[in-house]
Amino acid sequence: MKKITRDQVIFEMNKENEPVLSVKSGEKVIFETMDCFSGEVCSAEDTVSGIDFSKVNPATGPLFVEDAKVGDTLKVKINRISLDSQGVTLTAPGLGLLSEGIEKEETVLTEVTEETTNYKGFEIPLRKMIGVIGTAPAGEPVNTGTPHDHGGNLDTILVREGSIIYLPVEVEGALLSMGDMHSSMGEGEIMGAGSEVAGEIEVEVEVVKDSNLPLPFIETEDLYVTLASRETMEEASQLALNHMVQFLQVKTDLTFNQAGMFLSLAGDLKVSQAVNPNKTMRVEVRKDIIDK
Ligand code: CA
Ligand code: CA
Image 1 (cartoon, protein in one colour):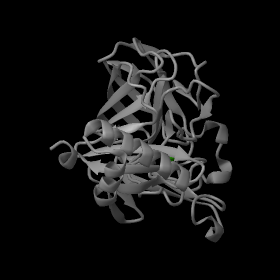
Image 2: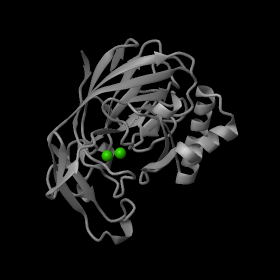
Image 3: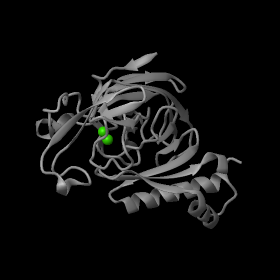
């Protein structure tokens, strides 16, 4: 299987980036990924002030997908996520939602097993996920720390093994890249970091023609999910809700009003992450209710 190694990284999603690999629609590819600190935080003594911020959030890629044209959608099926056994999380004054209470920097190593992330003796259930995944935007480049309509630093726990993420194709070849995996992360990513870990992702990419997807969309085994990222959670919520209402109107016979009422009864509006330069909100509906 074709593979992109973890030394082939970008720090902004940019239409000018040279692709490092080219595949056909329907092919499988392995992305090796570094952790979000490019592997430079290896002990409790490595704290935020020692971090080279030009090396934060490396995304492996970009991958050129043949046949992917502007206006198409890239369907990315996440077949497998394998993680290294050591992860790390950290904090420092000014980071995350509890920033005012933080007096000093602190780094904690985590141990990743088959089922849990061990954090200071607490066994936290494993939630293997991809924090950064996206295509290149048509306009200005976007750094890999920022999520927007092309994907990016979405930090959404549903971007996991078995899920499909659909991303807009804004430039020829789509230019897919990904990184920033977590072994566990709570909804919202409160302090600004998950259990950050390097690893390997196997995906299958497929071009869906002429679908003009406006925003990322996720399909899990059980859920349809719209998500949007904007400066405030309110703006992001509005976009994710609008997109879900549109989706429901296409998928069912419901009118705008009726689809909205359906969401009042059966849709879940959730915070994916509340700590990045744009906040990511999502709307989930259960497939079994819709597809009947
Ligand atoms: Ca992230
Ligand atoms: Ca992260």
